[in-house]
Length: 358
Picture 1 (cartoon, rainbow, N blue to C red):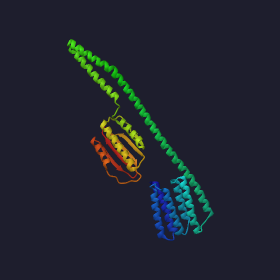
Picture 2: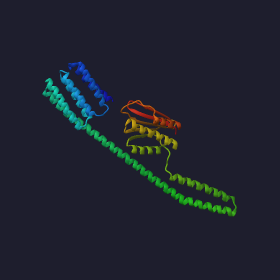
Picture 3: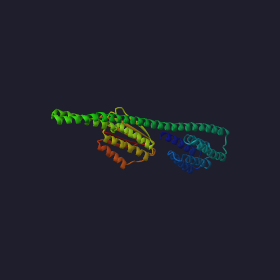
Picture 4: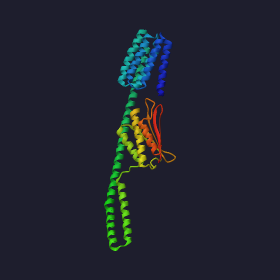
């Protein structure tokens, strides 16, 4: 945004100088200047930029054709717009825009009878430099697109690798549980039956005590088997896994940061679900309202051993926001488990932050 205001200030300065020095009808010049400013502002939205450049060039051409008595500043303004177009437009669009600029500026030059071979040569060299600049920018954008694609594939492969490791670990746990159940469980059951028979035959209380100990051991074994057969479903690790899965399903890039000590915080299943739902709603809100492809999520550890979280996404068109159903539900969920939630918006970012007790 700071670069835009710098370009806007330079564009306005050239226009104002042209009005003050060369205009033969100040009123019409000011009107055309206002129209040009409106078009330049619309360019910041990055929509229909090529069409807006054409309109801007036609406005400058009309002004230089009918309302000025010198072409130097208009020539500089044409060059400035070409330089701006070299940064914003694609190669074919830039060529078409250059041809239009040459036609419009040539008509103005012929009308004012101000053709100069040296100026034409400078203009040609300037155009060549702009094409080189445009080529560098296009190549850089293509490199970034390839980088984003490779980064997405890398994250996808990393998630697949983690999923494969989880699957292998779960299979190993299931195998161990089955072995314990088949060997230790069956032997303890057989031992209990024998102790039952001995207690009936000999009427000795010591057999009852041994039988009770065997039953407790069998119950503990069954509990261990059940724990091994079930996948871990509590804690930050599960929340991270669910977020990565949500990232893959929603086709957005999540920059995930976990500060030191986060994984060591014990988090109940209920609070894990609340944390995940908050992040899920924030991601949905970013896609729906901010149209953002990239979201930054940060999980931290407070001085009181609680979980702190921050979900931040870029805002391209800042608008006043209100607590709708989704944000209100998020706030209520967090407060129900004793946490806090804050939602605010800056000029460039929409931020959801808060705390959930550990």
